[in-house]
Image (cartoon, rainbow, N blue to C red; front, top):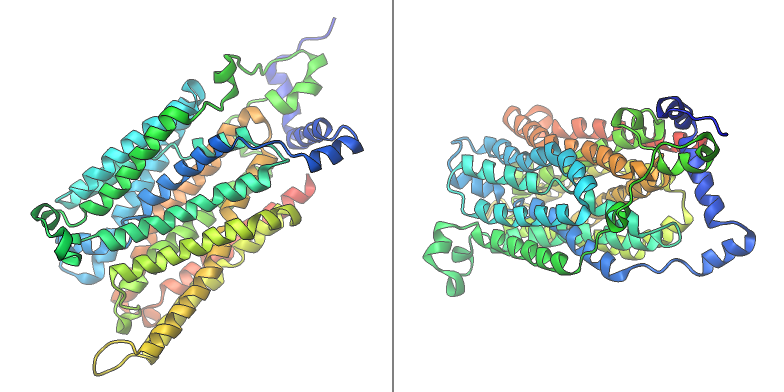
Length: 501
């Protein structure tokens, strides 16, 4: 009769080689022989296209809601008369941007816990309904307090962000993940394209399009129309998901629950599949810990760039910026998203099938210092082409400037592909499928923590640099570049840790 062991006795033994055991188990199951491996390579598992399409649609909602305020938030704050000092507008704008990310961070574990008990689908639907409502209320805000409140509530509604990639992982395997993940990753930049474009073109519509939209309601609520468009898309996604999105959590589909206890004769077979780990235990795995740290750095850098780029473009040329209008800022951000979509479609699938994922991740992280160092060069171009009589840029300078912006944004988007690679690394090195949700939630918590503080930190550094004039108003450049170098050190640890497994 086999000897019985308690879970507490088994767990320490499982932790030491859990990742290696899981990878070995998956390899033995997926490649039982050479012929089986050949068949697997030539006949990948069919992707459930309808479900993948719905997940991609849902993927747009979060960046759309988060980014659509960027082109006009500085004007919005100015219109609310929060401060009489123009140099401090960026600080209050950063608070608004951070409010969404901070409450999203605080609600992540609650949403994850709820999805583990109720299933993925109801959590997704609840978040969509809440986000559509709060986005509409934001557009109707008349005070800074209301702006902060509605953005904070929107962040709570959007706290279910780990659920969607969890559903993607649950419907894919190693034979089709390169195509599915690359295609899925394309839709986040599409959200970053549409968000700024909507915000930049539709803010203050009565003044911008007086022939068609000069209504008293839109004059009284100049930022309602972009919010209405985003809320309408979110509501459309809710309707589609209500009728077509299927539950992907196996225990909710079958009514079965994973059993984490086993007798000694079954431990070797089940330890890599059914073991559940706490957050503390997950952080005990070096590769998971490195993914958390590097995910924090990646999110901080990308969010800080989004904020700084808008402030940089909004600031006058003689104060270190480019003096862009909201529509020009929206166009620049949309161009950035378009470049990202191209990379995801034509570059990612090929690279993911040929390049080690950890090394690709490290390469992307090493690009960030150059992204921040390139921004002051844009101002140099603008200063050299500034017409002193008119105070405007010459046509030739405008052409050179936009080409330079496109090159800089291309490097930026190469750096941002680290997000997709991070998710693949999580899928590959999660210690146990039973801990998939916990692992994604833990890393997503790190990402959202950085996203919560980055806008306020970045805008504060920018405002401090502008008000003190330190390093010609460019103190923020060495600060962010230094942090970018630190982020590359975290990704280097991932390469080191994955090489040991």
